[in-house]
Image (cartoon, rainbow, N blue to C red):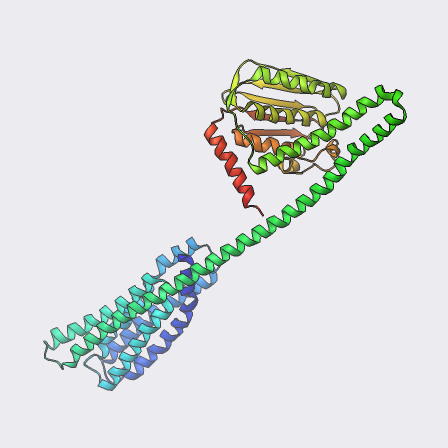
Length: 454
């Protein structure tokens, strides 16, 4: 906000500077025959030098800083603002040239010019309140100092009484200008605050609109993918059922195929239900000690048949010990990682190992599968993302790793991915103890962030 106020002042500075240049010869013309020419020329030289300095600063700003940051604007103006105070001092000192020495008509013209400068300053400088006040204070106090010296020291209070009326008038005028400048500054600030808030609102609406469009695009892709992915096993179930109805003697050949198709459909719906629970905030945390050897043995019983059906070796490196976590969610995380490893591995095998170290215990899932290229390693954790041309993506929604990432974040178990295309992939789950309160806060925060998305 302060940076924008400085920009507003500098935008009007060039116009006010032109006026300052024009007023110097006007002063010379009015006072040429009324005051000491040498003193007049000295004042004109000082006023011109200050005006040229202001012009140089304005040109520097115009060429170097129009698109700079607010901090750079403020730093520049902190150095340059004193030139405006010097300018006010030069014009206030001009009172010495005409007060009680020039004819009243010429004095009136000079006072009128001074009043115009003062009023012009509140219009051009009110964007920056401190600069405007410094200008008005310097202009008025310098003029008052000159008048006081002449009235008290030179005239010894024997001058005309209207001198005191002039001082009173100057004081009232000074106060009125300060108040008017303050109100104008407040108007400037309110306008910029309103503009800033409007810009924030526009940016927010733009982001929300884009997020809505992205969400629609994602959901459209999801629906197209879901229709394709579900149709295949469901269609196969129908064919197998018709085949079995026509040839019941083939039940031993057909039944396993029906079971496999049913498992595929169930796996897809399990992923969808996990995602819905995460998005709705219905994940219930049950933080407890989880024995790691039991966890891996249970997973081995579940996934060994799947690995053997593909001709893969599933090895478990079990180590005693336990970790503070949610047993169901932790099993879901590691199970998804094992399932993915088996799905994307055609030769070799999968290793699941519990290891220890300075950073604590961790579970590692290694495979000898297709691997993930660096360009896709961040994207694989997005909803519905499938690596293009990856074998094995045809029977999934691209939800597994997204669910893994979200659950590991909630539990406070950092997940690390390392992969080499064609060589295999490693997922490393760091088993930092789960804090129940922090986990609940992370879960609630994740749901609130989703709720703010259109």
